[in-house]
Amino acid sequence: MQSSHADLQIKKKDEDYDDENDIAKIIEGTNEIQIYEKRNKKMVKYFVKLNKNPIGYTKFPLGCRNILIGDKLYISGGRDEYREYPNVLIFDRKTQNLKRIMDLRVPRSYHTMVYSKVFNTILILGGEGESSAEIFDPVTNRWQLLPELNIPRSNLIFHCDSPRGILYAMFGNEGSILDNKYSDVIEFLDLKNIKDG
Image 1 (cartoon, rainbow, N blue to C red):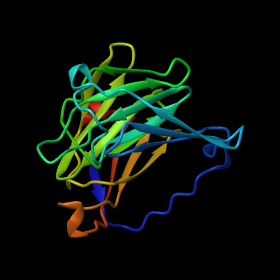
Image 2: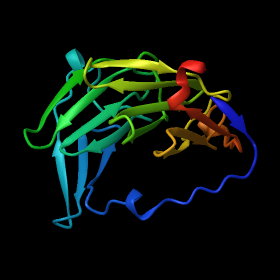
Image 3: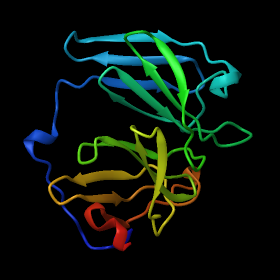
């Protein structure tokens, strides 16, 4: 990714805001998923059975991230006191089934997980002490590596300029999130010219 320390103002257009999308939250350290249904104006709680095999853990780890796309909740990464996880799960709120899909190429926690309308897929950026980025191809059910961030960071702010096909990775925490070392770095990746590096 290319980086810039210059001030950057990104103004989202009205179509970027979708009030119909529900909001999901994983309760770290438990087996609970909460989804706020905007249409019904109510919070729905799901308790899922997390088995060490095949899920990989018995409670949602710290720093895992999730994104709700339609009725499917994608959950990725996280850490416990022993290690970081590459695990990716899908929870289907209609059937209330939870399954593990293809793992991330790089274990990570406190990363940024976003859905890109440009490619109709999920992107994962950074993580605690991590500079790698990945994109999920739902057709092949595989994660592909993207060019790395210049500065390893967690809790990034992400923006996708859809018409131009440019991804912006902004700010975040450098090093351990407990150090409170905040980054002022803005990097961008031109997805249309990704083969040129």
